[in-house]
Length: 126
Ligand code: FES
Image (cartoon, rainbow, N blue to C red; front, side, top):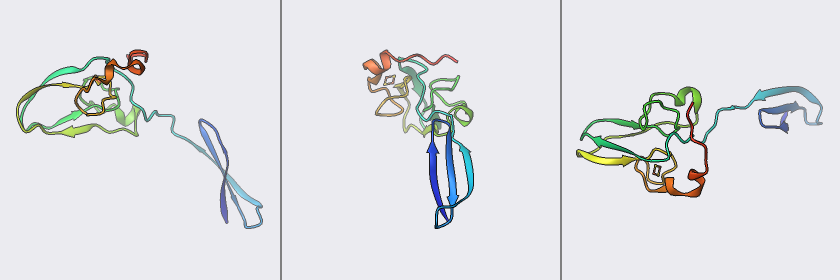
């Protein structure tokens, strides 16, 4: 028996199971996840944070957390393809943690928030 993907659209994938001579046996309609895998932008500026050596932090990568820049578990329902970035600083430090979620040096701000695609993007304020 073969499986053919007979149709794909934004929300549905239609799988058709066929015998070797291509007679359809059954068709299965599977709903694709509608949850985004890209982060939303909660802030277009970084957050100044005083980190404590040895303390465990979870930096929000999805942008849905209400406790920015840290995770509050919102990714579990709003961005299931994303997980928080966990880190433990080796020494006390004052740092700038990324608020736009598009840094190339997570969790730290690298200035990406100054680029046009962030400046022109909508702020997430759900
Ligand atoms: S706030 Fe994201 S790179 Fe600066």
